[in-house]
Image (tube, rainbow, N blue to C red; front, top):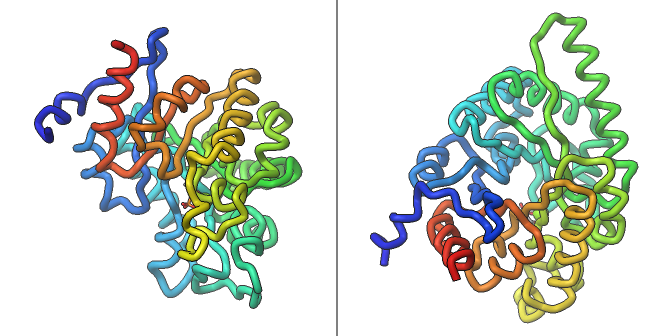
Amino acid sequence: EREALTAYRDMEPRRADGTVIEVAANIGSLEEIDAAREAGAMGVGLFRTELLFMRHMHLPSEDMQAETYAALAQAFAPHPVIVRTLDIGGDKPIAGVEFPQEENPFLGWRGIRMCLDRPDIFKRQLRALLRAAVHGNIKVMLPMVSELDEVRRTRALIEECKGELATEGKSHADFPLGVMVETPAAVFIARELAKEVAFFSIGTNDLTQYVMAADRLNPVVAGLNHVENPAVMGAIEMTARAGVEAGIMVGMCGEAAGRPDLIPAFIRMGLTELSMSPASIQRAKKCIAEMSAG
Ligand code: PEP
Ligand code: MG
């Protein structure tokens, strides 16, 4: 079975109409690049930057971040790598940030919320990404978005960063900015969001817990935490429709993106990018190929 799957490693799976479906990898460090490439990843659909921040006793410098993002982009060029801006909260604290004591960290100060409140940390990451974008195909996405204003404020910070880098004579390039759709709020404003961003990436891990109001870490309610629940599938479909109608790319980077039993439904909804752990890539390619053939 393994050998049969290897046959799919280097293929670019297409939808019946010929559109290429990007099957990309979810990774969290440069050490995972080789495994992702060997598995046949067509780029990175989710680079989790948390590890970069959690590994050290202090916040990572702009230079160190720029080098990391550039190395990542170079490894996968010309394929895109989608870097997610820092998605951290009280449940996973990092050195250099004081987190408040919260009753419900999953409903609290995390992701884009924390970043917008700490422009010192956020701008350092955005500046590093603008500098790294010179070296490859970098896209950037924001986690935990629930209001349009969060996108607009981020854009304003990016403009500030570009101005600073220009003044300092540091080379930089623009990147497409997208959002993760992982809160019900983002689903409900998907049509408005789609007018202001370059792409959506559906984060089914969080979207499921928030749509079902069931903590993803709490085994007592694990029975509710299933993507195939019609409420969650409906939210995914609404998001896909909004994105397709606006003409932007809609992808998925939650665990569900690698599930052969669900991939056909996602493709039919209009998703053109699926990002998953490297171990699932060949099986996903096979599933898409068989769907188009049959
Ligand atoms: C998600 O929420 O689906 C996701 C991909 O991000 P994370 O699992 O890192 O929250
Ligand atoms: Mg998430």
